[in-house]
Length: 406
Image 1 (cartoon, rainbow, N blue to C red):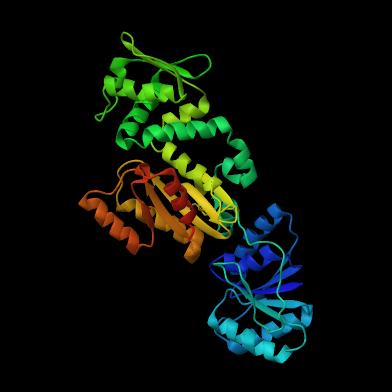
Image 2: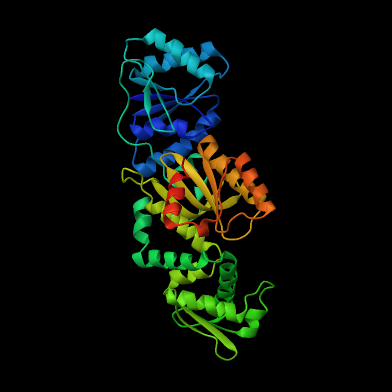
């Protein structure tokens, strides 16, 4: 079986048919060999990871020459015979040429189809009622990044969904929920507490097991202008102790000491936005639709993306995959400005093209005028702004997370 694919800058168009049913080969109609080399390298990597053996063939065409495109289509069909023309991607002229060629080969077994990338429907375009079938169209976070020429820096980001679920112990899930129950009450106080705990952990004297840290109180007071008072910090640590995240603490004399339950608790409590990020990740990982199936086929947190070609590196808090649709999520546990919208938009536009979804999840509600302006800008940039995340019920949180892909 041979697929004829019209190269499209939106990468899912180039691979969607192959995700449903594996062909023997794909003939790509490109306007340059450099273009073919680029897509070939990316597809080869994805196919190799999936154990798929697919021959990739280049066919250079003059994109604005209808007769040249028709002649090239005829050459490929005559050479391979068992061809299926995929009309999902490509320019109007390429699609017009496909229609002209179909008239020539009508009744010969030449197949044509188009895939609706929004719902996965495979549309028969040759009228014989036959379409390819097999697998559901799914891409992992890593595969999606590869298709757009990037790579993931984080080893954990290369895990599949099952491995990620397995790595989250029931105890760690409980820790995330316990930390979130404290954080959601007062995000700004949480941030001050996390900053203080982070300073103690980074600068204090560590115990042999690396979980308890001691620091002179004077050093802590010198650390920042927005420091938390000893009384406030003690109250917050009390809550974390009750939640099982901290096993011991002391404010006696001139020293302050904190003992974390384990390494996971330490990571959760010493980075200001980590808890919100992990809460969103956990909710997305467990989200089911009305039929009991997972909403997201892949969920990844703390994603560090290398754009390739020395362009740069970006970190995205959470990336979700709903089939072949990437959802880029920025988690904000404190104040932020419109620049965050632009950063998210830049990454989503490059690694998701027109198929990507974007969302900013903020713990606190948007009360003041500046936030209202931010909301309006988010609407204009087609970015979902979920504010007041810390004030809504667990049921509503689940509903919102499930809806991010629509």
